[in-house]
Amino acid sequence: MVHELVVWLQQNFNDIIEHSQKSICKEKESAHSSETLISAGSWTVLLRLDHMRAKEKYIRTIKKWAFELKLSGKLMFMGKLILILLQGDKNSIKEYLMLQKTVKVDVDSSGKKCKEKMMSILYETLIQQGDIICSGFEVKEYTSLAELQTEFEVLGLSKMYQEFVPALFV
Image (cartoon, rainbow, N blue to C red):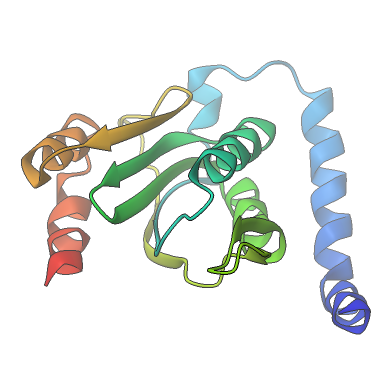
């Protein structure tokens, strides 16, 4: 495990340094307005999680990461379907995905802490001027596909819903 960490650091060292330098520059900039949020690097990503065994802890972790990385979006549950919609800076989303895969966020069937191995990226797109941006990060449970579809429509993401969500039930 230590060897894997060293290899990973060797492979990603330049990206980490570059990200750190960008973070320092961003801290020097003034506070972000909603117009600043829609920049060349702002993206929307839809993720699917296979399961959550330690649901409360997992949710706290996702909310914490979203807050720390200044990402907005929703964690959506409908039956066994678990979707995460994230919006924000592309580098922050990349960092979120790295955390999701490298940090022990859940427990396996024997109760032992484990990393997320079954997450899939369903969709990612650049946020266009005029797109609706989620404010903050919220966790929501839905009771029907129609209710979930309405949520995507309110966010202006009907096309994303049509292309990816119904296929998850086939």
